[in-house]
Length: 320
Image 1: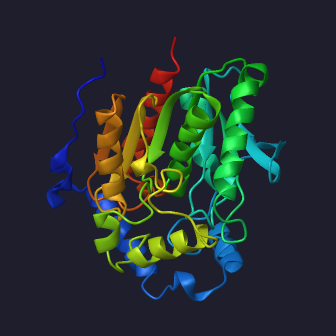
Image 2 (image 1 turned 45 degrees about the horizontal axis):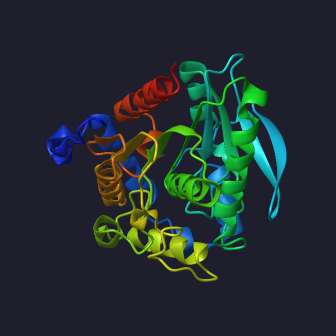
């Protein structure tokens, strides 16, 4: 029997928001006040993100990281690896960025932490980005990487205890990958799923539709534009391979859902965590008062607590 599913609805009380989270939000709004995300071509957007221009700080790259290249159906796929000497488990990480602007090396700081504190060999997928490589190419790359890792983890890292996860679009791709391995290959190789601020309904949940144009990292327009780029060659938004909120979720691994209460995608986590649990799977939904979209990308007390919870979850699901 799985534990009863519940969550802290009181987290939506504005009085619960930590002062440092509110300060981060104010700084983001000020920084983005005159910023037009869609005022430049996507290659320029990607470079600006790499330089830390926009909502998020510039990424800090790890000297410990190494790259391994595997073959996928659409060509080579780079995997960015940060691992401890004796891993307790393997974390297959799928980065966010609206399927269009992220990169595997943007999250080295998180992956170093998970390597050091949770004992995880972290493997981040450099999947092909839309709109140059639209659906289904990105999901195909993630599926190919997951299949490869399921067969190689023991040989490479001395353990086949695998956790999958990601943030924003990466959480979406993580769920799609789990479903594809189950339905196309009869495989369920994952001990757990770390799902942070995911987008699970590409037709847009109520919070995504109603968030409007407040530039707290992600707006309704941003979500709509990212989905348009991802599905530039078409795709049924009610298809579970596109919007996994519609999937049969039976037989999924334990999942930790993390989201801020001021995230435009908060309903995606509320709905998916509820469906996860209703399908008989273990689900934990952590709501962070006043947290913006992927708030863990900014320093603060919510971030410290969230990353600590993720480390503990990974340790628990990969334990003997």
